[in-house]
Length: 79
Image (cartoon, rainbow, N blue to C red):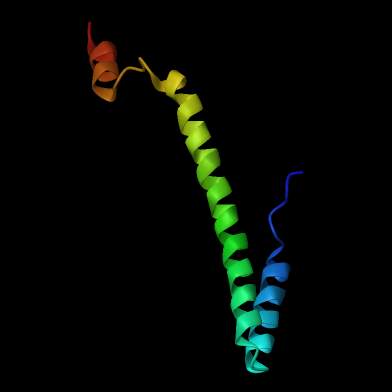
């Protein structure tokens, strides 16, 4: 099962819940909710990094042996 990115409203609601719990004095539950929020946010960043890493690996063949700007300039300026 692939999880979709959390809706911004869901993250905002989680933050509000954490703050309400903290204000009621339940520091342990507030800490747990903060950890859940951090895990959710970092998880999305991790997925983005993995996607970027995969693209960089997959695109290596596309850019290998591609002429440099100097080589292209030399090619088009020759008579």
